[in-house]
Image (cartoon, rainbow, N blue to C red; front, side, top):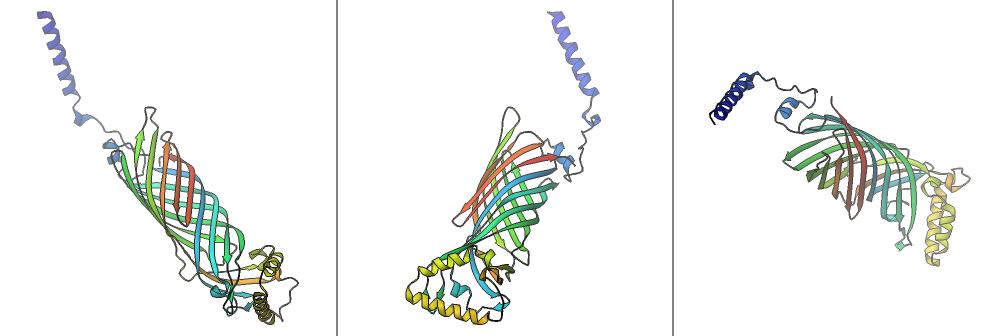
Length: 332
């Protein structure tokens, strides 16, 4: 018994002496190996599992938005037609714009709570317009047109992050500028959003996060945009479509349309053309989103410190938004 007590006493003394020999003030803290984020050393010292500071994302994005045409003026073959064809006489009923394509986004945590990013996207899309003309106080049946286009978009923004244990909130704002062959000017769009959610960590060290939020979008071009295209591009199959539409009118409606056509023909009598489809349309248009807010929900799955998969869906009465993509992260 005395031998056991002596052995325990010596062991305890050795442990105490060893602990005194490695005074915590002599232990060097592990140096944070990257430049970003600023204050990354402090984040590491607090034991926070922070993601790599830089990332590149490749995403597929689908957008659908319904628009109000608030101003419209046009000329045909360089001849003004504003007094004959305008937003009131053409009777814009519903305008649907849609795009789908890929975008690439590069981001950086400049600060632990601030992520800045730039993006580029190439998309294909179209605009569908429904018209219900009204001439001489006579309302006519609806007809529509569809124009397809390609667009390139550049943009940038920033995201503020804050987390408490497994819960997080983020606020994002960005500006993007798109160019297509249909418009002479670039189209500016401002987007802001707020999200809140919860993270889950599994035994295999993968992580899953779900969130909900809202997103606001609005055009920045207060004066609208101008563009030019042929009637054939604006209204494919125009002549057959107009003939079918015309044949479906009543006799009284046909007489009104004939008088409108005579006025247009008078304006164009000195403009040579073989087919109406070959005539150029120059137009000035101002459009507004019918619904600027959407409800968002989505999530991301972190496979490891480098790879993450993300998906998000947004919806309102007059818009839809879908994003799916993969993100690769690395330290800088």
